[in-house]
Length: 76
Image (cartoon, rainbow, N blue to C red; front, side):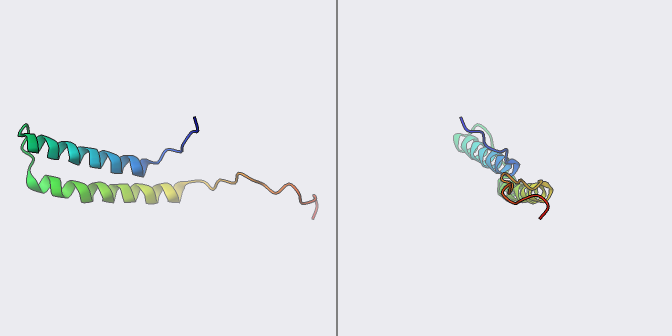
């Protein structure tokens, strides 16, 4: 199986969506009464945190050079 790089921003976005879906589902079933502002503020907060995480990860990631030019003669 091919390995994929870890992407923390996608993880945070997915957890935010999972949390909101669970909260809405429990509220619809009547098992838990979710406060209205909490649900409306969770999505923007999660997306903001995801964006900040992506920006920090992009800024701190080391450049990856998979292919180096070995055809040039030494000394030129």
